[in-house]
Every structure is written in structure tokens, then in C-alpha cells.
Image (tube, rainbow, N blue to C red):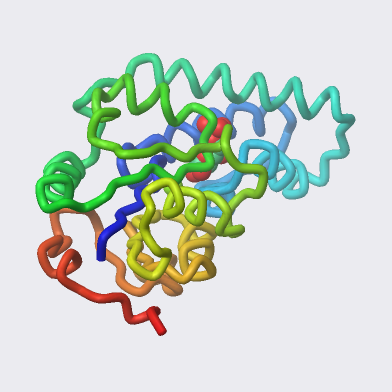
Length: 219
Ligand code: G6P
Ligand code: MG
């Protein structure tokens, strides 16, 4: 494998928690019952789609102006958490994994739906470890559409079949599979059952093995 594409939220940093808290605050204001389980459906999908899912849950009807206002409100709440982030928030094993892959000629990309991705990479100091960044500002179709990963592979100049995607969301695993890439789930196996392999975190992944593997998805 030559290309390694990392999702951001829930893979590199535990911002899935901050997204949840910010959506939960908005949900409370709108009188929508919103649980941690409901939040799984929001993982990996765009901000606009996340709001739609939340409004569907509460059967709330809204105008375009209200939707814009609520998305902005959620993002302001979310950015308060982001403003306090630093390198300590990078999840266990992630920095050593990035350094190992880089040292072994792996090409590294970020493939995230977030429009705040660059800010978070800057706050945590890991921006220089990436060869390219594809985020919510660069794509028009949200995961499970493979657009974000296909574009990342293109920018890395690596064939999709030679790419590995690290993802914590169901939508992201589906996107990687559709793109014809190896999908590695970070999280719980029963949630990420469509992934090729699932690990609880980066300290458990045998990267040497991954680097030397050829893709099972290649024809
Ligand atoms: C990621 C997260 C989602 C989030 C989306 C948009 O994919 O998993 O929970 O809604 O990015 O993030 P943004 O920072 O642009 O609101
Ligand atoms: Mg994620």
C-alpha cells in the first residue's frame, strides 16, 4: 500500500465528542431529543446534512434562513472547543503512525468532511505531516459518496486500490469501500462492520504489515 488517507474527527482527534456537545446544545434549544446513538448518524457527514438529520429526528420544519442561522450557531459553539485544542489532543498512536508511514515513503492525505479541518491541524501542530489535505471546502458530495477520498488519492498520485483509509464513521467506511480502497475502521467492530479491519485505536495497528500488503481489492 502506498497512499494513507486519514479522516480527522474521531480518528486523529476526539472532536466527535465536541461535535456532539455542540449539536446537543442546539437540539436542546430546538426541543429535539438527541442522544449519543443518534450522533452516530451525524459522524462523517457534512454540516448541512447533519442539521437535516437532527431536524428530521425532531420533526422540525425550518426555512433556509433558519437552517443557515442554526448551522452558524452550532459551529460557533464547536469552535469554542476547538480554540482550546493543542497537540495533547491528538489521539494515542496517531503521531507515531504518521511519522512511521512518512519515514517509509508512504504518501499521506487528510480526507475529512469538516470545513474546520485545516484549523484543527494547525492547532494540534501536525499539518507538516500531510502531503495533501482534502476537506469540506474542496468537495461537494458528503460521505458516503467517495468524492473526498477519490480526490485525495488523485492529489497523492496513488491509485485508489493502493490506498488505505482510516475512518471512524459508517458513512466514511462506505465511502472508502465504494472508492475501491482498503478500509480500516477505528472504533467498535459492531458499529463498523463494513470495514475490512477494525482496531480500537492506532496503538493496535501493525503498520509494517499494512505497508507491505498489496490490495485485496485490486483486479
Ligand atoms: C466530520 C464530522 C462530522 C461533521 C463534519 C462537518 O466529518 O465527523 O460530525 O459534521 O465533519 O464538520 P464541520 O467542522 O465542517 O462542521
Ligand atoms: Mg470521523
